[in-house]
Every structure is written in structure tokens, then in C-alpha cells.
Image 1 (cartoon, one colour):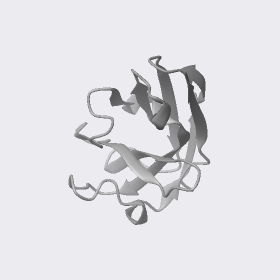
Image 2 (cartoon, one colour):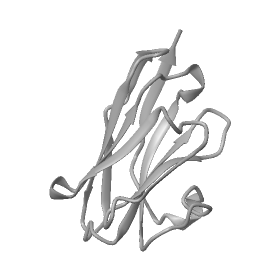
Image 3 (cartoon, one colour):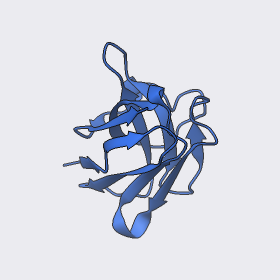
Image 4 (cartoon, rainbow, N blue to C red):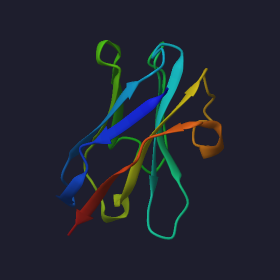
Length: 127
């Protein structure tokens, strides 16, 4: 059984930093793509970043490129999202998701391609 558990969300000031963690279990980490999505009130789920567990290839939404960094620790079956220079518009519930097999740059942000999801962790950026 695939299980994804997010942690690390909270309240931060604009310009600050936060690191989210996604602990995975129940599947072979190698060969899966792990992604972060976020959903603000009244909005759909937006793809934020994705990483290949096999080779570390990464993708980022244009809105976060240069500010967010996704990393992985295969030994711990954990993916991290380091968020720097946070903006008010980054406020959302952040979800970890996973799928078997690789994704292309135009596909990583499609929620329908990810069958496994965590419960979400809220991030609130204040002024």
C-alpha cells in the first residue's frame, strides 16, 4: 500500500523560508516520480515541482523556479521541497503525490497522472 505523509507546513512571513517533507512507503522508491502540488482556496491543484526518484531529474512551475528546490533522499524514501523567498501567493495546502514511471516536462503538473496522494500540509505566508 502506497502511503505519502507530508509535514513541515506552517505560518511564515513573506520573504522567509520553509521546508516541506514527504515520507513515502509501500512501494519501490526508485522508478517513481514524486511531485508537489498546491491548492489555494477556490482554486484547483497546481503542479509545483516534480523529481524522478531514479535519476533526480526535476521540473518546476515557472511561478516557483529559482525560489523552490525539490530534493530527494533515497535512503530515507523522502522528498523535500525547500521554499525560499516566500510570497503571499504561495499560501496553499501543499500535497505530495507519486506515480510509477517517468514524466515529461509538459506532464508533471497534471493531477490526473498521479494515483497516490498525501493528506496535505498547509502553508500560510503572511505580510
